[in-house]
Amino acid sequence: MIAHLLQSTIFAAAIALLALLLRKNAAHVRHRLWFIASIKFLIPFSLLFRVGGFVPRHVSIPSAQPAWIVTTQEIALPLTRPTSAVFIPEQKNYSSQIALALWFFGFTGIAIWWLVRWHRVHALRKSATPVAGNFPVPMLSAPGVVEPGIVGILRPVLLLPKGIEERLTPDQLNAIFVHESAHVRRRDNLTSAIHMAVQSIFWFHPLVWWVGMRLVEERERACDEEVLRHGVRPQIYAEGILEVCRLYVESPLACVSGVTGSDLKKRIEVIMKNRRALRMNLTRKISLTAVSIAAIALPIASGVFSASPIRAQEPALAFEAASVKSPDPSIRFVDFRITGGRLVSTNWTLELLIRQAYNVRHHQILSGPAWLQEDQFNIEATAGRDDVSRDQMLAMLRTLLEDRFKLKVRRETREGNVYVLTQAKSGHKLKPPEDASKRPMVRLLRNTPPELPGVSYTSVGQNATLPQLVDRLSNTLSAPVTDRTGITGSYDFRFDYRTLDAPPDAGPSVFDSVQSQLGLKLEAQKGPVEVLVIDHAEKPSAN
Image (cartoon, rainbow, N blue to C red; front, side):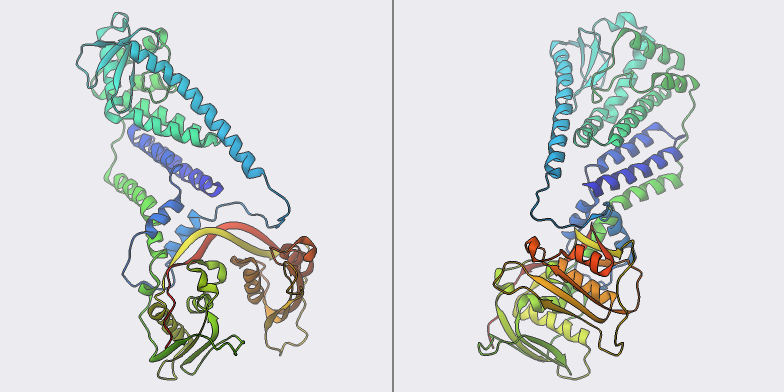
């Protein structure tokens, strides 16, 4: 929600800049822009990404995403403020429930307030009597002191206060009719009702109320320009508006389009100056059209590319010979190796094979049958030649999984938990390696006996780099971790931590341990996470 509100705020700021640039053009152009800003609050960019994900693609595209896709995803998702990543499972957090209750009370209060006002207008309409006249919608005369206005959305009517024809001159009354007919033609009641819904849902955001004022301002100014274009003299029109203000009260609802809305003093000044609005030149029309299309098309197109079927991204490579068998119960070890054009997998589950073949982690795999992580298989496969790269062998493994396991997968980018690794204020505590000639590695030692609940580990780094540490933290947190420490080189380190589901007495959390023992800091955010969705998988027949 925070990300969506920030996106909508930035979007509205861009609309405000456009409206400022077009201040000398017709008011109806600026009104449309403000209405788009209002609609944006109802349409998160992430929804457009999802829409794009349902569009089928059969064209091969490169595995690396183009820069414009990455940029669009960054705009759409990671705008939330970082929060401290402290995991406290034994405490309940009621902040979300309190926030939801406050929103509900605000929403209900505004809805009741508007419902009461609508009831007043509805009562006036029920008490009104038809009036003959030449007008685009039926005219009704009602007792009361509410100004003339268009009432209704699907079947609008012009509601006139009784006796208005005796209080305004024919020319003034004609100007009011032209103003109200512009409201009908522009469907201003509909746009105002939609924005009222936005204000009800996002009542806590001051920007939606400010956008509402801009909508009313440009709506009334657009109708004023329409009246003057019909040849009504500015003085007569201005006197008619002032007379309505003196005799009647303003409409109680924004979705009842009257005559006296917005800043009346400013409106009268603009009417009396009667300056002709500049026509939109071709360049501005093309630019506005392009921006409008891009605001919708870019997120959808990014979703199309992000959710493209995996197989469409690469040529199909297949093993010359391959066998898939049930494991031998007497063999307990687990192994996976690729050597010289030959692949051997022993006691590996389909999930492990998928993780290896598609280069994803456990937390990135979604859906799929339960046996995905339970049933084990032995695979032996040969490429038919020795000069085959590891990447080509993994591509062959993907083909084998699709053919033998009937595996169907797709990549998607979704909003999820991500973590950022930075240095603590006191600086890092990583130590230079004791022996730089040793093979770089990070070992994981289990401290907790298997019979006890939860697990405590010791992670030992030997001549290890920050990417190797980040890889270990990513596995521990089951979420992507981004290194922003700026630390290079190799180090030795050691830190103890409990798993996220372990009780507090099992040891320090990984967040506390990383900060106290390594001098580093983990911060949680919401951001784009690439996931692999398992649409279908079947157990293979042994051969």
